[in-house]
Each structure stands twice: as C-alpha cells, then as structure tokens.
Amino acid sequence: RIPLLIDTDPGVDDALALLMAFNDARHEVVGLTIAAGNVGLEHTVANALKLCEVCKVDVPVFAGTAEPLLHPAEDAAFVHGRDGFGDTGYAPATRTAEAEHAALAILRLSHEHAGKLLLVALGPLTNVALALKLDPTLPQRVARCLVMGGAVSAHGNITAAAEFNIAFDPEAAHIVFSAFPKIDVADWEAVIAHGFLHTDAERWLAAESPRAGFYAGISAHTRAWSRAGRGERWHAADALAMAFALEPEGALEVLERPLAVELDGRHSRGATIVDWNRRHGRPDNAAILMRYDQARFEGLLERALAAG
Ligand code: BDR
Ligand code: CA
Image (cartoon, rainbow, N blue to C red; front, side, top):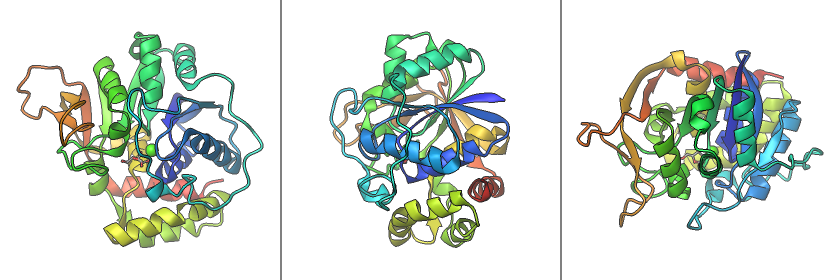
C-alpha cells in the first residue's frame, strides 16, 4: 500500500478528506500532522484525534506549529464553527497527540517511507515549510506532494485574489512551492467547478454508519453556511484534493505551469501567480487540476461516509 502522510487543519472539509483516506484500500495513512488554520491548533488537534476515535483508526497524530511563520492570520471559524467541527460539543477523544513535533514527524516518516511517500497538505503549509527548513533534502524522499491551495486565476475565497490556505501563511507556501520540483495542486477554482448537490450529500449522510452520523453533526453548521451563501452545491475543498490524491486516474485535465506565491502586493498577498504563458522561463513546478471525473469524486464521498 502507498504510505500517505496528511498535513491538515480539521476543519469540516478536512474531516471529509480524512474519511476518504481512511476508507482507501490502496493507501495506508501513516500519520496526521496538524496545522493551525481553520481554527486554533488546540482545536485542530482535538478534532483530528476525535475523528480517528470515531473511525476506529489508530493513526498517530502530531501537533505542529500554532502560528504562521511571520504574520498573524485570521482563522475560518465563520465557516467551520468556533471549534472547527461545527460546535457540537462532542466528548473529547481519550487518546492524546504524540510528543514529536509535526515537522519532525514529517522528516522521520519521509525517511521511513523514502521514495514511496505521498504527502498531502490540506491546510496552511507552516509545518511542511518548517520541515523543509530543517532538512532541504525532504523532496528527494517524497514520491508525490499534493497541496489543496491557491486560486490559479486569482479568484480568491478569503481575499479577492487569495485562497485561505495560502493566505494564512504565504511565506510557508512560498518555501514549499520553491522547494518541491513538482506539486500537484487542487486549487479553489477547481473546487468551485466540482461542487456536489446538498441534496445528494444529505442522502449520503443518512447512511447507517457511525462515520456518517458523526459527520452529519459536525458538518451541519458549514452546510447551512454554504447553502445560504452559495446555493444548492457544496464545495468541499479538501475532499476534491483527496480524490485527486487517492485516485489520480480520475483527473481529466491537469496543466503543468510555473506557480509562485505573492508575498507583498497591496491587494494580492497570498495569491498564487501562475505563469500561464510561461513568460519568465521558470520551471513548471505545479501540476494544476482543472477537471476531475465528478461521478468518481461523488462515489468516493458516498463510500467514505457509508464505511465503518
Ligand atoms: C481551504 O481552506 C479551509 O477553510 C478548508 O479546510 C480548505 O483547506 C479552502 O480554501
Ligand atoms: Ca483544510
């Protein structure tokens, strides 16, 4: 099985992505490294541990860094609830996080699974950037790196031009996109193009499984927010990224281009600048998902919720 390491800030759509990963027979989740982002680190760690408990998986959970590298950033509690899991008041998991820091765990696991590791980042890239600063040879041991982040035509979701994960810690994103020779990218605009109907999601959530039951509860706040603001389709960013990670054969169009992260900019800090016409002669460091098989994506979602 392919070893899969997930850096994540759960987060309602992160949780859906994790359910997909836990349900995949071809991948083995070898660790969850936890970032701050959607909400503070104490909540994202607690949420990851709780989800593992609900799913009866004993994947190790490693807490990362509580702040972006340079500048403080706003969280996304307005989407995910104050605790990041819809404020349901769930009983905390009995297990606690490992003692090892997330950045160190990324490095250790990259050695243990050298040449085979699939690294999927579903949150701000602070932990991955720190790992790269500690050991710049990390990319040599990672078989594939996939990031949910960016807005490749500057159609942002947290500012006019920037997507949340990149905008939360642009310096970290810059470090990561400068270090890996090629990163698979599922950006916000791809997510918008792959919304699924709330009415379908409600049907999947009615499955008689503890996973569906728990997920129906923690996602209620986000689903209501999404429906009120965006209409009949739900855009679960990290779930699309995980579909691309687990079943890359479902990608119908992927474009390779140079991608840089804007660190300054009066209106554009955190934007992902894609050199579509290759004006500057930089290498194609991003493989950008443009189109994914929608039926395959929805099948993965439905099965992930029904499992367990
Ligand atoms: C991304 O930001 C977060 O709110 C989601 O979990 C996702 O990773 C979408 O922009
Ligand atoms: Ca996320």
